[in-house]
Image (tube, rainbow, N blue to C red; front, top):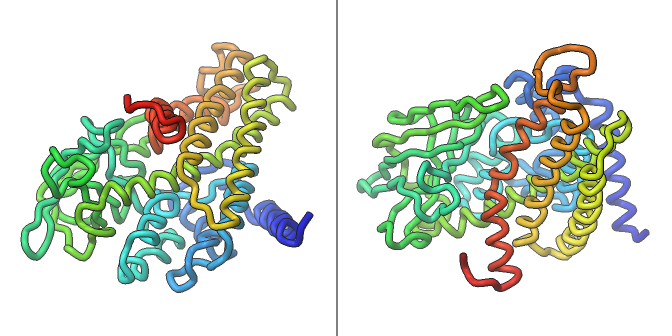
Length: 373
């Protein structure tokens, strides 16, 4: 083991020990279903310990360390089954978008408050008629001289009902321009003309929302990147999101071990375990390249695709063993709430960050050179 590898292993052990000693009881019991203020307080504690924003620049509130260490932290939280960036999409999506594409004022204003959970962010990308085909969005961003005006509708916006800000993708050009006519704005969710309608999910929770924008005024300095560069910014953001979602592979591995230790069996569970072993090897290869400055591209889509589908298979395997009575969501001997809610919640994980179908098309076109579908 080289000096760098030894240092990273020591860092991993340090993170693992910190998690073991510091997770509040309410977080242990309820996970990301804990009250909002408890989750925000937990995120702030993670940040103050130096384990949130690990590789983000110091001048904006981060810790200025290695991106590999940041991924190690995510791995260890996933292995422990403990929430990391606890609420909203600030850490996973909008923070990186602003760091990579925003101006100095935007970085100084927003980055630290994202890390400390002082501000909660949502994302305004998908629309009722533009989910898989994101380039066909209709939400308009009109230049009104001294400000922009936003009119349109977004859907599946996670945490919009709690958010202070939204990273919104809208159309500044003609619809015929598709990818070239898009722009990203930072929208204050407290602005006049915004209506948020929570969507009741199969889990009984309502993290997803429909958001309506009616003549919403947005300052011109809130453009992220440049006018017309929205597609480029969005795609770089999605790659980061997919790589982060992909770290659930360590959570899936933990669930498999737990199921095996408590007597669950089945060929599908074994097959899924084999998929996870292969995916971990692929993931580690990417990390080795990232040590040399490589930025993950299509690989992020591969990891997200396999990890999310593996999660579904694991929960389905558990239910095949438990039988249909396991679907009765009530506390009784043998009831496993994490299995019940895990199965229900796993239906959405193959949609977040791009559906499995879209990711397969992407990999076919970009990696295999197949013609566009």
